[in-house]
Length: 111
Image (cartoon, rainbow, N blue to C red; front, top):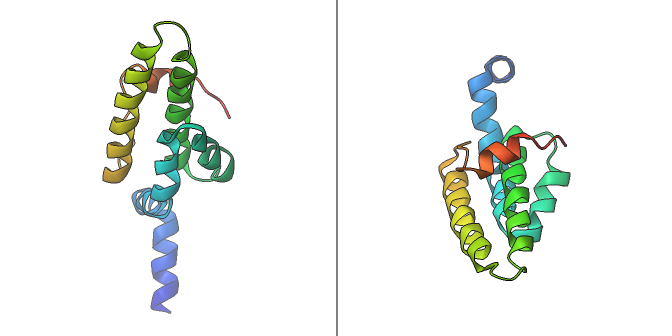
């Protein structure tokens, strides 16, 4: 009986649900900042707001990697590395923190 009450409280309390989402999907969100692996959480974890938040930012960073192939693209490559590391740190901390510039662009993505 007590177990059912706990389950009910978890589904009704948004903070508990968000904490569970973060805990359950951290590994998926980490893939968001590892190049083309961003497609795994983007397609595979559509039910997780945490994984989707980071996947959208990772998708923008992947665009930076593509731009790094252009002449003088090393600037984009360095930026992509820096933003990827920052994103990985945010995931490890369990935070949905927008990356500078990247976060605003990622919010415009509707998937």
